[in-house]
Length: 54
View (tube, rainbow, N blue to C red):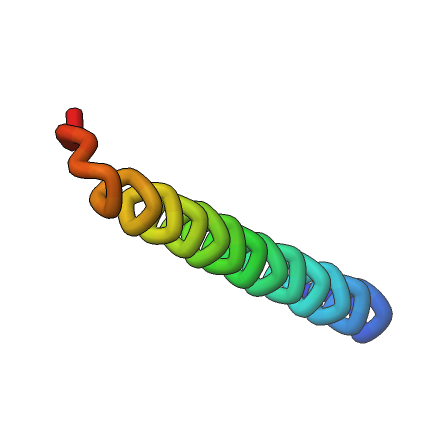
């Protein structure tokens, strides 16, 4: 059986790891949204003069 202090430390470490994963997911989502918005703008600009999309 774990001592009480070790259980508390383990819970704090688990919450920290969960927070780190959550922040990572938010960052990846933001990066994907930014890249998608940039590409949509590039495609829109390219379609105006009749550029072929590769």
